[in-house]
Image 1 (spheres, rainbow, N blue to C red):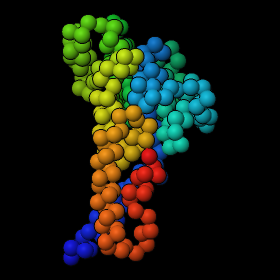
Image 2 (image 1 turned 60 degrees about the vertical axis):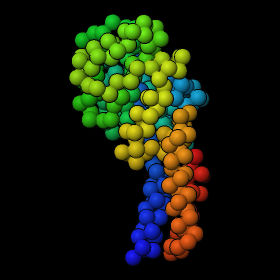
Image 3 (image 1 turned 45 degrees about the vertical axis):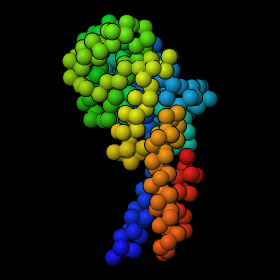
Image 4 (image 1 turned 30 degrees about the vertical axis):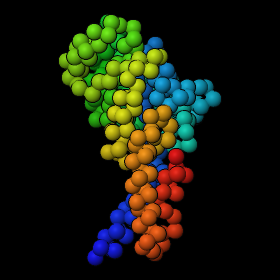
Length: 239
């Protein structure tokens, strides 16, 4: 009946919120040292990666730097997976990303010349079958009319379309990157974990709260045995 249907919907909302706050998010950053990975994280979250965040990573090499960004959010600065100079490190990095990463941000410098090695490194990333975004950073260093050309060229070289051009330094198009990360993590049930650290959470959080408020109102109208915490409270605590 109608009451049972409402009750089931409320239970689903509660389960959805509680499942997200119990899980962990690992974001893997892959790219050269000068491509602006840390600056991009600052632009996305308002907080820089710092040595004080570095967490011991049992079983992995010291070159894979794991930042404990929040209680349930880790950001891994990962070496290239196709580094022929240190194949053992590349192999261990690949194992880490394949096992632990929820999403990969593959960084490309908009002002750098493209190389076969860059495309080869990206193909090594794609082979892991992990959700991946190509972050074309430093677009402020090239002519604005060249950006579309660079993006098109990258799509052809990489055979991949999820490319977001940004300037982390000048915070250009960073919200588009944040929205794409959120979209991908929504499918993995980890959207809320990213929203907890994102500077661009307002619209999506408002949507979550609206849904939670409706469910909470239903909780007040229809008692559900065993449910002593409303989804709105869960969301507020989580964020």
